[in-house]
Length: 304
Ligand SMILES: Nc1ncnc2c1ncn2[C@@H]1O[C@H](COP(=O)(O)OP(=O)(O)OP(=O)(O)O)[C@@H](O)[C@H]1O
Image (cartoon, rainbow, N blue to C red):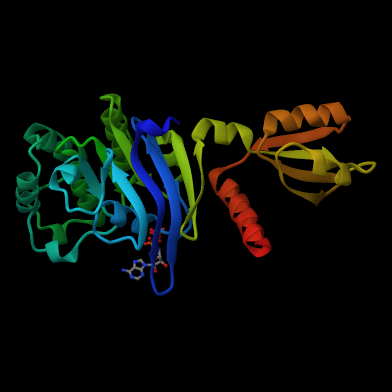
């Protein structure tokens, strides 16, 4: 990614809480793409969003959005962003959807009433209901509608599909694809849903214990992380330490060794060159890749 095209730029950002430290976080979010933040519960995804929205303050480091510094209560900057928080605000329970929309509209000059109505219809949301009386999924769809109705350049979505049924989920994916098709639009989203990452993301950031363990191009990630099963003969187990991209190896029983590599193509060539028989191979799922990164990070922290 070309750094000049980053919509969000976090440099050495830190925030310390009683039981949690976020950062130092270095992260560039590329313009025109969907970047998914993936990480275990409590890894700092929502905290990162709150910092970006200026809803919480960092202790150190610098944050930029659209090349402007974050943290100066810049209304114009916030108007360029659509934000879907992880949780609904209980203070808004007694407001009808239409009343909430009327408040939101005041803040955004780009508010498009046609778009708002279209999305409400698509998601089958009744704006006459009080927010506290909407089902969890309906409220989520309503809040997603609000985040999209001023056609922001940047969407920050914190677990957008939480509470959505499969049909609503599909509609959400279509709406977000359509949003991206307009060009010059960017999404940063936190998600636990593997299918969501597969369907939407261009880039994946693994956030673990408040630190980003790298930004990966999605297709490259899935094509490079593979598990190979090879025949356990001669001194193959020892030899496998030399396989390109090795992350782990273990004897899987039945005369088979399981090897994890993040350089699948080079690894395959290497196995052929060494005359090691491949009995099977599978691409790795996102949660397996994350587990391997976490293991590696733990090891690195213990050694440092
Ligand atoms: N207001 C707060 N005061 C103190 N600690 C907080 C506060 N908000 C979050 N934390 C702590 O910060 C850590 C990260 O929380 P955060 O909500 O950012 O994680 P997350 O990755 O979004 O998790 P999840 O996947 O469960 O939504 C947690 O240990 C949480 O307890």
